[in-house]
Image (cartoon, rainbow over all chains, first blue to last red; front, side, top):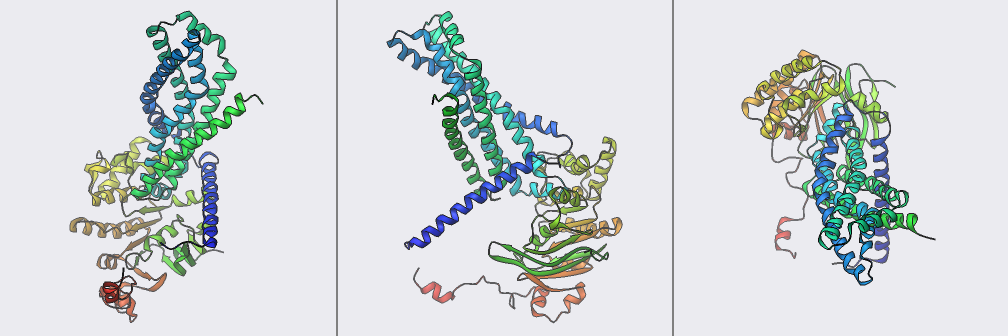
Length: 265
Length: 269
C-alpha cells in the first residue's frame, strides 16, 4: 500500500473536518424543517399515537425487565458494601438516588437507542431505499412532517416516561431484594429513601437529563435513517452509527449534565 | 420570465452534477402539453435523474426547470410541495407504502389533500383500481403483490388526484406481455381521456415509440436527438440509429472504458 504524504494526510484530515461540518449542518436543517414551519397534514395526532405505540409502548418490556434487574443488583451490591459499615438501612436511599440521578436516565437512553433508535433508523432508511420517501414528496407530502416529525415527538415524549418507569420498577426490584430477601427493615428502607431524595434536585434533574437524552437519541436515529445511503449496506451502516453515536452522546452529555446539576464548584 | 403555454415542462440550460461528475450539461428539453413524450436512452444515461429534476427532487447546478409556469428550483420548500400536487409519478419500484393495503395506498393522496367524504373516496379509489385492473385486490398488502401489480397500484395512486402531468419511470420493466399491452394502452388512454401531459422515461424502444407523440434520446449528458418516433427512426445520426435499431456495435460502446484486454490478462496484478 502506498504511503500517504504529509500533504495528503492534511488534505484528508481537512476533507473529513468539512464532511463533519456538512453533516452537522444538514442535521440541523433537517431538524428545523421537521419541527418548524407549515406543511403538516391532517391526522398528525393519529400519526403521533401510532409512533408512541411503536417507539414507546413496544420498548416497555425491555425497560421494565432491565429496570427490575438493575434495581435488584444495586440492592445486592449496596447491601454487601453497606453491611461492612453497619449502614444497610441506607440501601433504599442508595438505590433510589442511583436510579433517579444516573442509571434511570442513562440506561433507559442506551436501551432506547438500541431498541427504538435502531428500529427508527432502519425503518426510515428502508423507506428511502424503496422510494417511499420520494413517493411522498411527489404526492406533495413533506416526509419531514409526515414521517420524521411524529417519530421525533414520539421519542421526545416516550423516553422520559420510560426513564421514570425504569426508576420506579428499579426501586421496586431493589426493595424486593433488600427488604423481602435480605431482611432490611422495611420502615428504614422507605423512610431513608423519602428523607434523602429531593424532588427538585434528584427527581426533576433526572427527568431533565432524560429529556436531553430523548432529544439527542431520537434526532440521531431519524437523521441517520433519512441521510443514509439507500442500499442494504447503507442502512446497516446507518443503524450501527445510530447505536454508537447515540450511546456516546448519552454518556458524554451525562457527564456534562451531572457536572452542571450536581457539581459543587 | 414565463414559459410558452404550449409546453407543460421546460428545462432550459440545465446542468446537473454528482460531485465532480457532470450528468447533464446545458440540456434543453421541452415537453409539449397534452402529449405523450418519451425520454429514451441507454441504461445509466441519467433518464431517472432527468425525471427527478423535473419533479424538483434534485436541484440543478445551473439552469431553469419550468413546470406549469413556475421555475421549480426557485420555489420555497412549502411552495414546492404545493406545486407537486399537480404532478403524478409512477416510480420504477412502485414505491407503495408498505404499511398500508392497496385501498389505503390509492386513497392516501385523497385523504391528505382533500376533504372528501369517505364514500366518495371509496368510489374514486375503486374507479382508479378498476382502470388498472386491480379492483379485486383492494385488501391485499403490497408484499402480497407481484412487481407488475405493485406498479399498477402505484399508477392508480398516481392518478388519484387527476394530475396535470404524469411521469412514468421505466413503466414497462417486469411486466408480463398481457399487463404490458394493457399498460401501453392505459398510458395513451389516460393521456387522451384526462387531457394530461405524460412523460415516459424508458429504454423499451418498441413500447415507448408505439405510444409517444414525441421522443427525446439522451446520452453522454446531452440530448442526442429529438423528434417524432418516425423521424428518429429515419435519423442519420449514428448514435441515434444505433439506439433505435439496438445495434451492439456503434458509437455507443458496449464495454465500460478499460485497459487493453490482452495486457490486462497477461499483465501483473
